[in-house]
Amino acid sequence: MRATDIESDITEVLVTEEQIRDKLDEIAAQVEADYAGKDLLLVGVLKGAIMVMADFSRSLKSLVPMDWMAVSSYGAGTKSSGVVQIRKDLDTDLHGKHVLIVEDIIDSGLTLSWLLENFASRGAEAVDVFALLRKPEAAKVVVPCKYVGFDIPTDFVVGYGLDYAEKYRNLRDVAVLAPHVYS
Ligand code: 5GP
Ligand code: MG
Ligand code: MG
Image 1 (cartoon, rainbow, N blue to C red):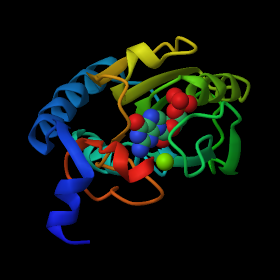
Image 2: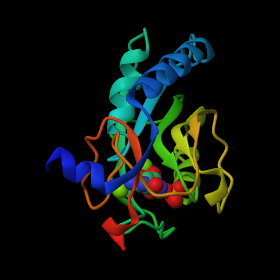
Image 3: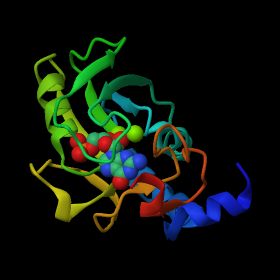
């Protein structure tokens, strides 16, 4: 994909790479303090959370185990179906763990509320959420979120792990996808 194509596919950069980096450092310091002495496990939700997990985990000063879960609720479209399917389950036993779910974005909240219930039933000591992005006006269910990077409007965004039909994940910033791309 050429640079000129990328420019015409996005209407606005919402969050820059630098803003993300600063925010991750800030939240990492909070997490270090909040989880001191606790058996913390980071759980990334594939595939959208790959970038935030890679950068956030390296912003932490201590060594922290991580695991991954793949769920799907979106398909190739831009609206959440609310039907959550496990594509790849955890490899870790959650008993006694303080789980911090690392998510790219909370839109309707349906995926995370399903995940929270699922993890709670597996014997975790605590389950909390860190979402890099959140769309407060799109919430269909309110998900308790311990750490939030940025609240954003309801536009469909791509970049920094977020895709449209598997494209745009490797954009460094978070940007609004131009409607002509998907309509
Ligand atoms: P939910 O609506 O269940 O909160 O969102 C489920 C998943 O849909 C998110 O974790 C994310 O992967 C994807 N998603 C939600 N909003 C957006 C968006 O604006 N852009 C992209 N690329 N994915 C989104
Ligand atoms: Mg996600
Ligand atoms: Mg997606």
